Amino acid sequence: MAAMPSQVVASMPRARFAWLLLFFLGPSVAIYSLISIYPLVATMALSTYSSTSTGEHFFVGFANFETLLTDAVWSKPFWNAAYNNLKFFLVHMLVQNPVGIALAGLLSLPRLPLRVIYRTLIFLPTMLSVVIVGFAWNLILSPLWGVAEGALKLVGLGSWFAPWLGRPSTALLTLALISVWQFVGIPLMLIYAALLNIPDELVDAARVDGLGQLRIFLYIKLPLILPTIGLISILTFVGNFNAFDLIYSVKGALAGPNFASDILGTFFYRTYFGNQLQVGDPSMGATVATVMFFVILAGVCVYLFLIQRRMHRYTF
Amino acid sequence: MRPLVSKVGVHAVLGAYTLLAVFPILLVVMNSFKTRNAIFGSPLSPPNAETFSLIGYHKVLGNAHVGTYFANSMIVTLGSMFFVLLFGAMAAWALTEYKFKGSNWLALYLSIGIMVPIRLGSVAIVTMMREAGLNDTLTALVLVYIAQGLPMAIFILSEFIEQIPRDLRDAARCDGVPETRIFFEVIAPLLRPAIATVAVFTIVPIWNDLWFPLILTSSESTHTITLGVQQFLGQYITDWNSVLAALSLAILPVVVIYVLFSRQLISGLTAGAVK
Image (cartoon, rainbow over all chains, first blue to last red; front, top):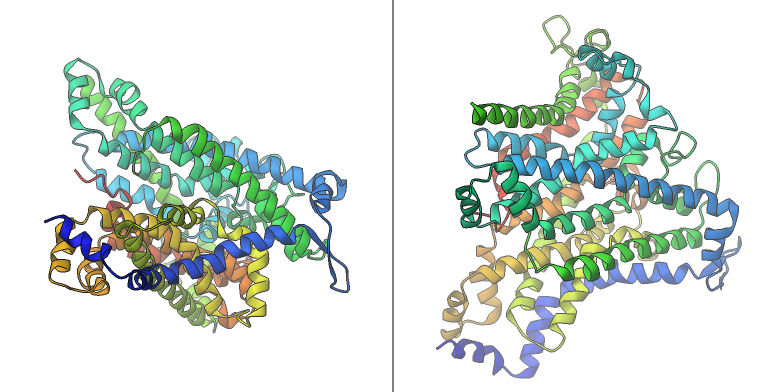
């Protein structure tokens, strides 16, 4: 009985089966290949070319990469952006993901009243545009408005206030925390879903053995959700090394003050499109994009081959 | 006694964080309805009869382009959503249902886009769109967003299709119903619950995207609302009434839609975790 229907497909003439595949897969494969994969490959190819002011292209091999990584005019801002990007990522790993995991742990406690309200409201900022979030925080943290200062005074910490977004020493950290504030909903939801997937029997058995909720979370649930923690780590990595919108909205393409908040995304934008300080350079832009591609690829490979392979597959 | 203390503690932590998540949004919306003096004089108090003012909204809505930006965003988002769902579901169906040589490789190829952001190909995308004469058109944006959304949509929809009982399609096949009709009349209607999940992962990022409108559109008639708001805010940064009103106008539709559909969106996000 079960064999019959699949025979309908299997016994189909080859040509008809091919047409069927073409019909179902053709549009996706065509659009995806043409507009996603081809530009990626073409960008990498372009990074091995250079162009003169008259528009002539010529092959230069890896010379652009050498310039980017060693010529002080390029390498200084590049390494600055790369280093800042790493810090941006570390803030997310150390603040966003632990906070998300902790909140998910609390939200998944059994018989928690108001669960739906907490869940809905905490996820709200994640749905908003980065542009909106960036500007809103820009206003709130502005010394002109004084809301942040006023709020700190209310809790007796008025002297802590400083124009954080304007200072070179704190701009990047502040922007990273704004991004954390917005995107904490992603690890929260993925971990929350994973926690709900843990079979009741395991938790019940632990409770019978006399473990409290905190210990159940630390010793039973946390090890079981490690695969999801791996997943949110790689999602954070890819998202952060590709970030652009927030810095651009709050600080502009120059990622001030004095490039203190420059990350690879804004550096790429300036290189490709140019700005007040330099003219745009497609070849060097492609070179920066290619380097970003390899950074992200390295992260994905570490995840796939080192982290995920040790864990059984776990849907999120 | 102890359980009570810890219960209070849990609600204190969750309540405090909820406040932190909502307060900045509330603050912006609240102050957008106030006079300039009240915005600066008492930012933390809600508007009252004396301080209530809509001047910011008048200025923003008086801007001739706001309607265009909004319409553009709707066209781009709905257009991309339609094709992402249609082509994504078709591809997901073929990849899960038909076994053919190279199907695993094709699935792997299509999943590259989940992890590798399409933005990294921007240099070539801009060149390509320029050569195709699609520079500064909404079509260019829709095409890019379809390509961007497909990998994740195919991944999510495949998982949904796998959960559909085999008997359904097999019964239809025994009756000699052609494959295309099985997909469009039996399978596609069953995928409706998946739309929420696809929406969270692919549609919301499209509505909120700044990057592609920034690099692919140059005239105001093709700006999306996200780019329009970004440029408006940059221009009027000293006009606090207008800035707060523009921010609120951008926030409110998203908040209303989100609150209306939050249950579906969140259950979509936590799909598979339904107990």
